[in-house]
Image 1: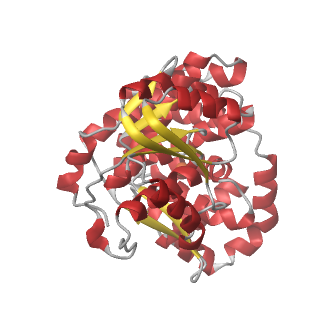
Image 2: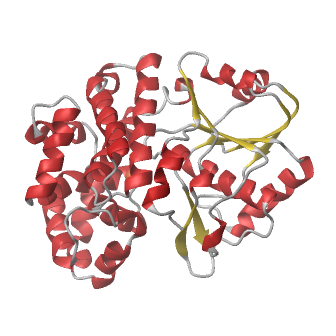
Image 3: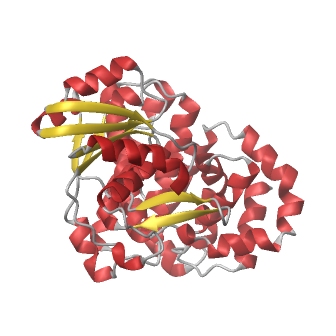
Length: 378
Ligand SMILES: [Fe+2]
């Protein structure tokens, strides 16, 4: 369902409004609306709901707790869709992690287009009547700027990506107060995921000069503010990291990431978090890719444009950053399952076919992935 490359500029140059900084939430005051539905997960309390309600210029606000767990299915979305249909909002707010935001994208789609068919590719140009606002309560994944909604197909028992650039919210609120109390380990791992989006997207087979600048800026910000995570948190700096993560998410969204993601996605069936698995594979994938001249030149360019002396400095930065993340559990899981995975053709077949990993600059085959896997698990 990806639009042709020539149309990317339409979506790249039509960016959502990004509200950030002190009192970012109050920026919503300027968007007058009649009825607002707020779809939320478990992560916000009554105090924050009140704060959000106070920030809105609307006649009526309804809070709807999401009815799905993990990736949404058509069935689990249904109760929420019904509540939204009854309330008839003109503004929909999703507040939560990736699964809340992804589910809300589909709720809005079925509310406005009840005949929507996720398998039908010609539905990619949707003209909305509602305004959609995303307020992420996590950092790193880039779900708030993603054109994809990850759904779970009950019948096939598989994850499915429903994709349209029209899913990108009209407004994104980056509220640092939602992130600042996250455990340090989660923050660090999330920033490694953001780094991987910028690096893999920049080095991918899809080249886009405009997107390059977002990747360079994301890495420059993360390297400049890394002390926030190791030393202590100041709201203003967390907000900058939220912004860097959004830029990196935009790079991932338009350029498609590579082997790190192809392998990391397969590790979710072994109980590893996305960010934890990314941290395991990223250095090994970079090293393997820069063994070829063109990817090496791209990596050097990315390093220089984001404030490093060269590629080896950026690689050391990535490795030092990952060394600060406690990956004991992930490494143990990898070692324990190493033999089984290496002899499991299906694991590597799935990785090679992974939609989210098709942008690797060096063509991937099983041998390539096994080498990366060995390097990461040794
Ligand atoms: Fe990722």
